[in-house]
Amino acid sequence: MPFNVQQVRAAIEQAQGQSTNSARQFARPAVEHVSLGRGLRVVILLVLWAGGSFLAALLGLGAGGLPGAGITLPLGVIVSFFVALYISHVVRVAAQWERGVVLRLGKYHGLKGPGVMLIFPVMDTVRFVDTRLLTLDIPHQQVITRDNVPVRVDGVIFFQVRDSERAVITVQDYRFAVSQYAQASLRDVIGSMTLDELLSERDQIQSKIASVVESRASTWGTHIDSIRLLDIDMPEDLKRMMSRQASAEREKRATITKAEGDRDAALNLAAAAATMTSSPGAMQLRTLQTLDGLGSSQSNTVVLAVPVEVLELAKAIAKARGGS
Image: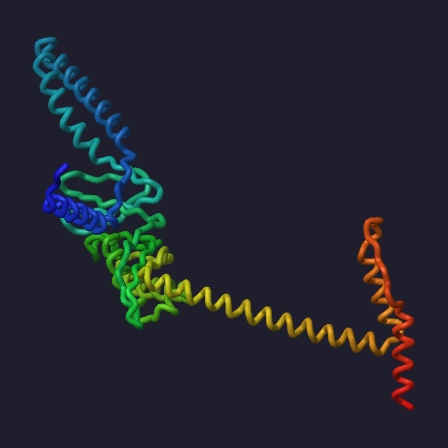
């Protein structure tokens, strides 16, 4: 099946563009506010609408009987519907973890919630803020360390809104602002360290990045709980060199450990030989222990060509001749 190289290249560029756009929008939540007052507003709308229609019918009956009711009832249904619709939109409900920042005619009016609150349409505008512990992803960042090693680092931010008023008024989007500042701080901190420091001092790096971001995010009404580094990706050739270095280091430790073990074994054998030489019956006891270790099975046959006593007698005679 023939294919066009330009079409393939365009498809790849489009996929990269989509991934870039999704990475830019990762800090925005899928659902910022959970509507808890929809059922309550529907009930208020129906009750007020029915009550207004019934009241209009009663006024028409009292004023002109059935003909009067026929005139006031349609008018009352229409008017009561719009009045009930407006009043039903006045009632809003905030969850336990939400706070509502209210702007009245463009100016800050107050902070409301949780629970039922009255927001008058046209005059008031409310922005709900989630005060729970929030999580933001830090996408892969290309960073060059102080010793000129390119690495790709990603992480996650845990933060919480402490001052809802400042989080809404002082910054356009506090989630996106915290995310972007954390990415910049991550590149700055890691860029000032070597690769060995990056791999061995992860806790110190995380604490330093969190403190840098906290110093700025606190002015936005947010608090950085912690920042964790998830993955540190290095070039493949560097990984292979580090693997060979680690393998050589382990082989070096194994060789040193084996040499130290051989030395300790030789020292212990020399000490054991000296002890047996100084004790007349030590060699005989050692021989008996060796015979006992061969087992009591009938298939084993042990033959002592020269008794131990004969060897000791030969040593004594040789020593006597040497002395004479």
